[in-house]
Image (cartoon, rainbow over all chains, first blue to last red):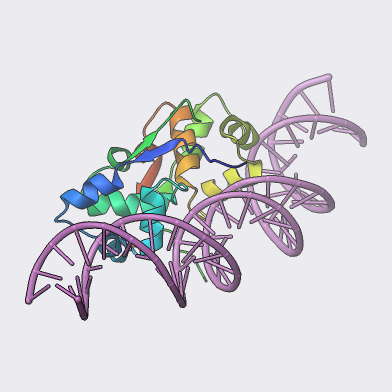
Length: 75
Length: 75
DNA sequence: CTGCCATGTAAAAAATTTTTGACATGACGG
DNA sequence: CCGTCATGTCAAAAATTTTTTACATGGCAG
């Protein structure tokens, strides 16, 4: 199983950049994960834990589904 | 590490039982995880992946945050 | 130009989630 | 009584996510 084709999409980068030019490292610090994790999530390399998803959404003051989306087809 | 104290709550069991007396095994099959995973999620032993969360919510025809909740305090 | 800062890649190690398999119990119907 | 189903526990293996460390690039400020 090579290319993942994750059913989950996300707009983390979008929200992050609109939040006062917050860097990937700063976002990581804010939600308690490393910079590498933020990079991987933004690049869609794997689906984050529901916990990370909640922390990101809450940081931006929105709901989980405002940041993360579901791709029925890929599912 | 030790006792988890998960910041995530869920009403999976509630939704499952209201969905035609669906068993844990049947829910597992429906979303592509094992019965053990359903048990662990319902018991709050760990936070599921965002992917599992989406599959469960979609199966019940609701949003992720209708099934899973965030406990700011524990966070 | 020089020095940061942000982003990106890579790979191995650590941590967590998920699976597999086995066994136990109570409820229930035949 | 006996068999089945749903739930639950346990433990080890497998798979996936996250961390750690290191290095590379381009942009931009001084």
